[in-house]
Image (tube, rainbow, N blue to C red; front, side, top):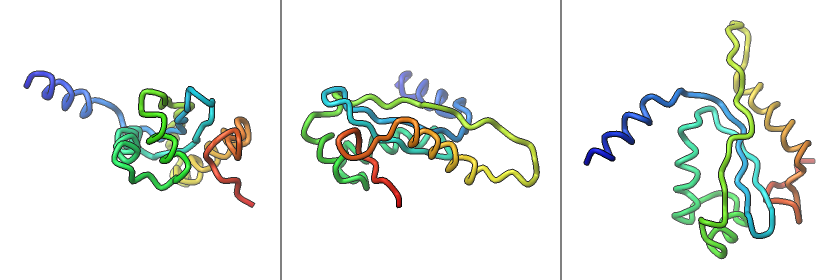
Length: 117
């Protein structure tokens, strides 16, 4: 019971941060790049993969085939806070994700992302 209480407290203390993350298959080095406005939702992404409900079908197939221990989930970059009243966090996060997609090119044989035209 103490572990559950400690986990709850840790969750409450984790700050809400927008991040770009990577899910990497350690067997074939394929990767998925995604973003979230709340780093706490990464547990939800893992839960989707574990329950077979993730929207990326190829990633989902390989998660099921290779098993969860074959994948790592890591934060690539945290969006810096900005107090400008005209700052659009959603757009800034999308730009940050594009930066990482351009840098890592996780498409076709290199990853699970679909390249946008």
